[in-house]
Image (cartoon, rainbow over all chains, first blue to last red; front, top):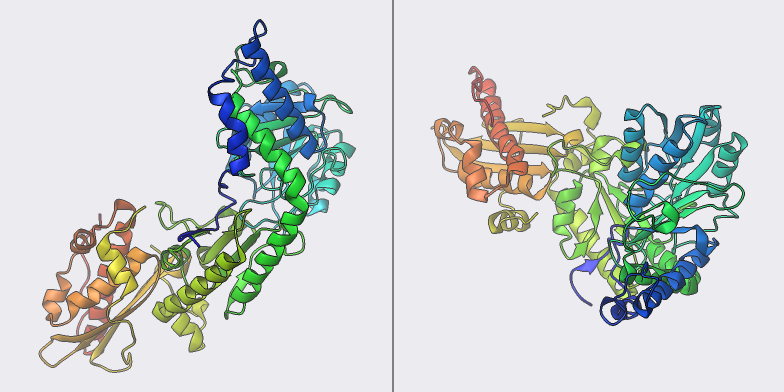
Length: 403
Length: 137
């Protein structure tokens, strides 16, 4: 067992050695430009890209012509939202999204607002799920796009995608989903789920960083996005720029492996995650954030009341995890996702996200349980809030000097 | 962000963790910060008849730098007169612990806790609280 233990697989994943192996030839002997039509160097590179396109398409039930390669999910989100807004501006100018989206979606929407678009940021319920009735109420004749993430990066909740897309389509809008955390972890099918645009990333599924894809539906309806990068007209004119052939080959291989192993892997990880969660919620005053029924199999976000997340992470230095506390930022604002669930600031500050992955072992999970329990206990001994809680003092009755 | 060795040392082996009898007139208690902001410090001092701090204890809810700042403060307070304790400046803590700019607020909080504890002691003993004129960085 190697220390520190990596339990931050929602941030990024280590590359699978099989992916690396598939990529290596494309750095040197197969170095050609996939757009070079006149010689074998280009043909070989193009072949690699075409094969990867099929591998990616297969994982999400799409056809290869519907896959646009990008530099990652941030670019895919931007291309989808800004591209749809530009392409469909004659039809309407309203976009609906949620407050718990990734910043790439939220900030692309803010950009659209600057261009004169209208954006509705839907709240979520306490468990992190979208209220379908609230979504339906927000739909208007001007709504051109509904963009709601598949699985949340911080708490792992899975949105009711089929129901959401049905509502979007009922009102004639397109449905886009940032599926970065869901693709390769749970079954995602663009047809069964009614998805018109979907963003995914390689590095969250044991592939390389710097490459991702945008799925753009071609049939029923045929969806178009206005290119956000001008140039040589690559990727059916939607994304210019010489293709990152090794990266794309890696993304393809990563998708293939997920397709093959996802089912057994999801079961294995949910058993480990449930063990971690069960053991850690034995600790007094610990709470799971987000819906536990509709949740990605590898994520658990837990708040340990009366200890602060960053201090806790320091005590858990043998574990690489993530905290909802943002004590390092000047604003001291805790996670906006956790706050959207209605968590008080102090509970949001007390949260830790555990993200298990393909290379996580049971031994590592057991160690993580032990380290976390010790850290929480240690910090509670140091915590004046814990002492007050134990003495039965209501913390809300104290007049805190906010600073 | 890497923590300095001194922060790690205080964090791993915090000095003077605990609670003094806050009802005693020889004990001053300062409780500063707020749970919503991610840090709360409680610092207590025990003062003898010569106005010398004979004991100091703390408990802190916060990040490593906040815990280290309060732990260091208790170390510095012990053996100091009340007057000298009032002179402890947050920048002394920043320097000693090599705190980065984003963690300066932890040292400010520690200084506030010291002053709050001293004032609590003063008020308990019929003295005026000392107003802090300092503008923090």
